[in-house]
Image (cartoon, rainbow, N blue to C red):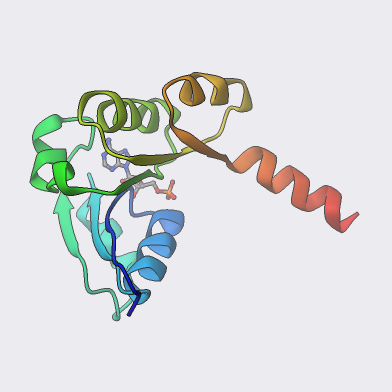
Amino acid sequence: MVASSWYVIVVGCGRLGAYVANQLSLQGHDVVVVDINKEAFGHLSHGFSGFLVEGDATELSVLKQAKIEQANLVIASTRRDNVNLMVAQVAKTILGVPRVIARVFNPEREETYQKLGVETVCSTIVAGNSFLFLI
Ligand code: AMP
């Protein structure tokens, strides 16, 4: 159990989202995972103790179902830059979530997120740097 636990919403329960959600849940944080496809929740481990919300995270009603107004952190981890940007924008600028981190594929779009105060993880750059590091 961590000293202070966060309320974290992870949008997208593919391999990446499920990995992050599993780790945060194991660390004792309160985690809610949102995915449009309920089959995706199968990526979560048996030890995952959070909640699941099935629905399109670009819909405000779905984010409200995940109790986004209580969230300390939202992680947008789908494969779709447009979905992640929309979720991040709503979370940060409309609902005032303190920290929002979004997965982004197109490095040229990182600046758009950063202007909104959204932190980014660009899988393309991270993977590219890992290759270069190994070489
Ligand atoms: P990945 O396989 O890591 O790319 O996972 C992406 C996950 O994001 C999949 O499980 C998708 O079902 C999910 N996803 C994609 N679009 C949305 C959306 N609009 N709302 C919620 N989940 C989504």
